[in-house]
Image (tube, rainbow over all chains, first blue to last red):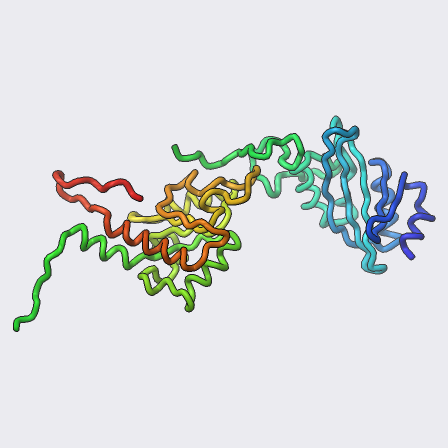
Length: 154
Length: 163
């Protein structure tokens, strides 16, 4: 099966792996991301980029998990990758060179969590609007803080 | 017996009576309350019976703005422009909990009630509101329209504050 192949052939590319409800999860460092995903796509048929998002752990160092989900239409298997990045420099390599659909998803993760995707030059806001300050899905963003565009009535 | 050639009435009552049965709603539908709006506007509940007839899908031809659903901050300039494009007289109905008060959304994205940016005449709570509540709101709005004053002479009382 493809999970065993990953654990055997690519085990120098990630630090840790476990099973989460039938899905293989890999922990890896930020510099290993691009070579690992390149091999997953080219050799093991993970051809569909499902999602990239982040998880904020305010008390933890490094603070953010960047979470990727990939899907192999050849094997009908999904795969989750977790990369820990620090708050001081929350940067991972962009995957837009491998998957075109990563462009919008990286823009969303960038505006919601402030994750930098080095190599992606088009990180404009996609769901938020121009002039929005801060990253609303970070835990330290006040839950009731609004930044209205239209002036409120008196 | 001669035909009745004239009737007597008050000018305010006549204008109010004419206006209240010719409400043309503009449904600004953004969310799930739109399903309830479709139910209330179509055959079974049929707001046409109350003179709130065919929805006009342009703000320039309508005089009741129905804000149906959640309004986000990004959408606020749109609804402000739609409201500004409508001709006087115009009324606004906040349809559902989200348009009334933000509903259960309390975060960076949702506007806490459409009355933060445009004046609202009647609020319909509920998530979503029952069609009977919407019909009741239309009838209450018609009552308030029929009570409005239309001063043309300087000695007449100005319009009292809406609802």
